[in-house]
Each structure stands twice: as structure tokens, then as C-alpha cells.
Length: 381
Image 1: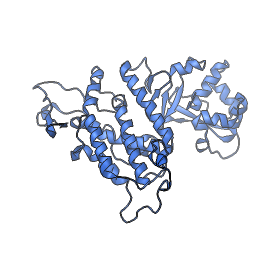
Image 2: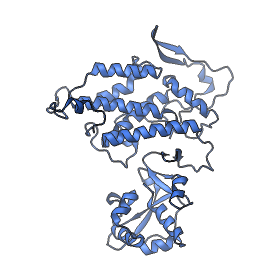
Image 3: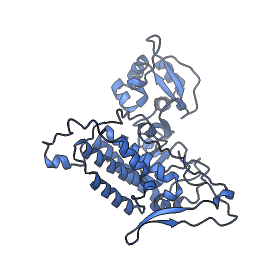
Image 4: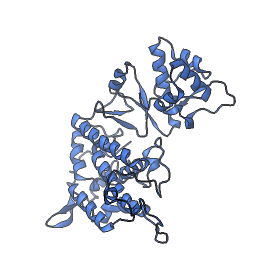
């Protein structure tokens, strides 16, 4: 399976051949014989052990490296000698997350045991089967997302994959920026988009003392914001940016979302992002990308790749989103729970836009006296 962990693959290989995992490991090389719990650690090989595994399964090392991320050159073990060797390392030491893969995908490959895959986020979406995946087994999960929420997430995920495929490495970086920007609004209940409030009603039964994945609610808006970021970067790098026109588009977009972009507090993460994605006043770009001699159709294209540029210089696909973004906003930093005795001192004002009255502030319902308050659903992974 794509992005499968090496440890998961070796255990499936052993099971398919009626062997214990340690027996297969002995054929690959030498290492610590104690086996960790499934999904708690990853198996790393040196180059010689990779060569042995390649001969054992009858496919090239390059094929294995394409399918199993931790067999690629940057992750190979460096040992004192060239003897085949392997080692188990706890998942906590990795920048990525080890998740349980889609059991339907695993079944299509002929296996019914748990399969573990690597992901740059603590969740994953199986587009093929329309499933939300995280590191909690279904039989142990306290909740499962409703079908309509999963359908919305799958559709947004498909748009994201197309977006990143068209833009190249910069696509994932801009998605990371949009994901961080949305954390600013999500963490502050009074700035949360009205559409997010509506979607949260489907999760009213969730015990928010456990982490809650925000993308189940906010994914479509994150993808749309990433597209707006890409549009601005594409025009900026071509020396064709009309800042006023782009801002008018942002105002229209935020009005469609039910919140006014004109209010400084609302637009703060966008202002921070624009401040970090601009040409220094003392150093205008000497050349444009692509040259102005490009055809009008090429300049207007929305699927052209955007090259990496400051403040982003690297876009390692294996790095988590929070390591790629240039923004400081992280999920879970906002209000998680508000003590009952201090709740009455808070004015819950939500910004709004009305076509007739313009920008204003709406008073949200106040908590009733003596009411018990659950944790806010903005406790996230």
C-alpha cells in the first residue's frame, strides 16, 4: 500500500508466508529481537538490509522505496559496517504520524490485518472509499463522523490533491499557510465562521475532552483560502499583482462565508501572511516569472506551477504542515474552556456583514446562570 510503514509491510509479508515476523527479520539482517506493539514503532533498514529485502520479495529496491517511505535514502540506517542491519524506532521520534490505513484498501490487497501508513498529519482521507482515517481504531473510537461530513471532507480533499498536483511543491506550502490562518479564526469562538458553527452541530454528541480534528468542519474553506493565496503569489511573481483587486475578491469571499474581511481583527492572519509574502521595497524583482512575453493564455492560467519563493525555500513532502507554514497560528491555542465564574464577564460579539447596514457586530447568546459548560470544540490535534 502507498506510504505503508516498513514494519507493517514486513509483518504482512511474514503473515502471508506463515512465518513469525522475527523469522523474516532474521532473513533481512541483524537487530534487536524484541518486537514492539503494532503501530507504536517503525522499522528502519540499512542499505544492505534493503538489498536483502529486495531479493527476498523479488522486486527492485527502487520499487520498495517508492512504496515504503522509510526505505528511501534519507531514512536508511547508517551503521558502522556494511553488514545487513535493522532497528525499531518509536514513532514519537519521527516528524510524521503513523496511522491505521483504510481496511477496505487493505482488503483489496488481500490482507485483513491492520495496516499502518505514514501521514504528514494526524489524520488521512481515503478518497477511494470515502473514509476518514486517524490513529484511533474504529472499534475504540468514541465517535465517528457522520456520512455527510465525510462526503464534504472527501470532496475538499480531492480539490486539495488537484491543487497541490497543479502547483507543485508550493501547493502543499500554501495549503499549510491556509490551514494555519484558519486556526486563528477557529481558536476564537467569536471569530469562527458561521458555516463552521452550523457544521459543528452534527458533532453535538462529541466529548470534547478528547482532541477533535478541525478539518472535519473547516476543510472546504482551507482549500479555498489556499487557492486565493496561490492566485496572489502567481500574480506577484509575474509582476502583475493588483493588490486592490485581490482584496476585493477576498472581501467577496468572506462575505459569502458570513464574516467581514474589512474588520482588522478578522483579517489579521491574512495581513501577517501578506507581510511575509511580499517583495522588499528596497529590492524589487529584477525578473518576472514567467517573462512578460508569455502568451495571455499562459499568464491567465490557474493551473501553472508556482515556484518556491521566500519565505519558503523547502517543501519536503514528509514534513508536517505546521513545519511548512510561515504563520504562527496553531490549533488548540485559543479558548479551550472558560471557567463558569468568569463566563459572565465576557462579551460575545461576532463580526458580520449586512448588504444594507454594512459591517457590524452581533451579540451572541449569553450563557444562562448556573449552566454547566462543556469544553469548547476547538481542542484540536
